[in-house]
Length: 637
Image 1 (spheres, rainbow, N blue to C red):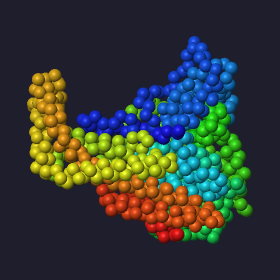
Image 2: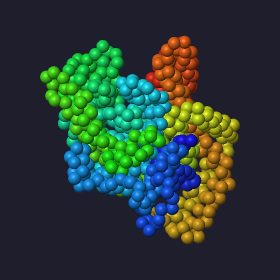
Image 3: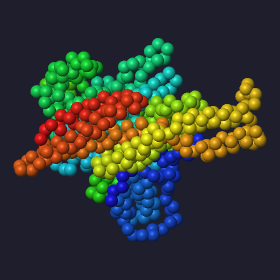
Image 4: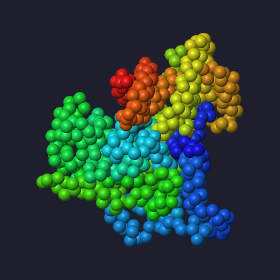
């Protein structure tokens, strides 16, 4: 049985946490012992079994595909291949081959170091687990036999449903900001991102669907980074964020390159306004996109000249380029169905054959994109995101993007105390309560396998049961708050302020003193003991406040995800209804309409609570759009 849980991220509580919270959460397995790489083999250790190492790896990965399983499988492969000379293993990438690869695909020195070795690296299990994540998503969307053009359309719609637009701006240098581009699985677990992150998720999904993909932009895009942000007067971020050098994702379908816009969330229209437009069509006649050029509601910052001169850029994960990954792909694909290797030469050749320039237009080209200095380029987005302890190479530590992401998952604005709680927002007791409330939220929605992960892997029934239980649990928290005596909470806050103020006074007997008294100071030790005794003795009231701070947003989040699960289930039935023929078609159409009715009701329930999620810009509009589709299709029998 394939166990879900390919998440790799650890969601930490806010730094002020004083109550023990979670340790291992979000995007991955339950591996709690980080390592900077896979252990090397002990050359003195003899072969203890004659089982083929590749078969053993396949057997393990047929059963489990989370990060822990991928680490164990590749670690054992390293050991077995090094100790058993009779078993064929991958070779390192030689100097000539490395030179040829670097001439084709832009590589930074650390990229070359990642591609060159014969042994599996610390980043390889992360990449492999991500491939399995998207393999499951692809399987849930296509039970088999869907034509490439339809499969691309279905996959793109899924990406836009799972990732609503809400870009995350980060500081990469003093006075330099950038719209962050995160690894596709991190974007999926968060549930929102930029148009470029949607494009990255789409690229990863298409790889597992067996479809070739590219990015479309101006001929000058090759050396442009993913999206630096210019600042206005006073260093303020300008209101309109750039989307980077690209404006479409292309998908090769036989002799055509179909076009999709992740920023608008729409396929390019065909010549008759129907179907999906192709690269050759829009380059020959940009007027095909007149409605987009003239759209005042959703302005499109692309001109007809941009369309005429559009160029194809290929973007591939660096981890998929190594000979060891090619051998893993060859050995395991039949057993696991995951596509983990990328042959850049063959990929480029297929695009050159499928990208006719058209009469009077420049010759078709297909170049690889990934400026070596850009940490957010698709090829190295994972290695630039993760710290060495997680297999990446970001040396920024506590201020790194990985750590920022963990805290950014739960906006501070969604943890709200009831009015009766009289605590200063940044006071020690308030920060301790907020940390604990965030911990409850994290445990409910990011501990693997998270509800989103189950939905995205197509495990709708498991997700629905889990989310219904969470709705009920957070609802009970609201009920406890309703029946609680306000005086009890008021008194708790009064005493909490007093004991923490006493601790502060013991630490700093002189208000102007900068350095606190040591913890061994008798007065400090006594005051700290009084604080901890208070929290233990009044734990029930503290828990009541914690429940109150997390219950509303937790119930709304569970309701949102339950609606998303119902919606995805209806989308699958809709696909079946569209393909059904004969006597069975009426029955399937009725099943789909009924599923859409359930989804519409679930979205209505969420929208009644959506005011509790003000910390998630863009989500309410996204929910309304999905609710409109559900209501429309529920009427079709």
